Image (cartoon, helix red, strand yellow):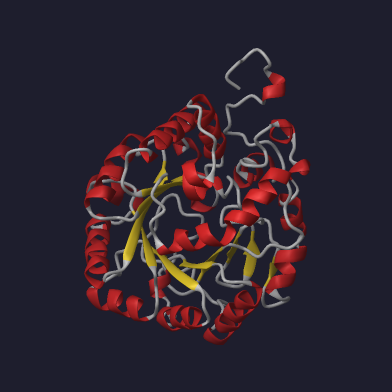
Length: 385
């Protein structure tokens, strides 16, 4: 069984195992299931200008962002629905002055609060304040195992050194950290080195993100790895999970959950919580089903890469948005998927990347454009499908 081994995933592991297995067996989504994860863009302001970011870089705090009172009210609304993991992100969340106050408030309300940062603003004093605020884990974005790779992608000389110093400060404070990496053509061959580095510096996990061409990332469409390479990387990821001591997770890569089942079948292994841990309890695209993104101005989206507005928390209760928004209802009904995604036998565990489908076609229910798999009922001559 892969290492789950962190407070974040142990909580999810215990909380949703039984419900998930029942729902997956019956291929249903419950009429109401609160989100498991909420990514909250505390601010769109950031000290870097990363090429792949979904946002628009600015060193100034944009106007119209939720104030402290509004932010706390949003936390109260979340708690009324359940106790999901709350990811404080950005932009760069550490440029927001009340970040510690909000993290502490969420923690006191019973939420598991984590932070997503580029790491360059994390000093020993910052790490101490994060610990005191109840932050359980920090993700640090690194897109290369060396300064040359990382700094070029982040468009800031010294970014790699700053992130590594931030990691050292987190370690000294005793805060768990993970590495987040966006995979592109320019760094795809660097991923094994990033994994080794993550292991060596004591990361709890490595999460790889397959580039989604939205925001400034739209300019990087030619940096997307081709579908065949996509498949190769995810198969490599599956192999690495068997030997690495840290937790691995593929994000914006729903095909992985098909690949995991295909590979397990060939190995004579049944995918279950006992054999594959957390990944047996979840599925590929969680947008609108177990996850949502909330912008710094209160707009709610299925994810940060799918710009289809579900509602705004200033205008209506978060619970109503989560329960009733049309885009969320669509995404919870896999029978609405089109093209080969709609015909695929893996649609209930994969669903394709809805953001990629939208970027390519303008229709978030269209087939995933970066999948090479041919559904079983369309290729009866392949005995391995």
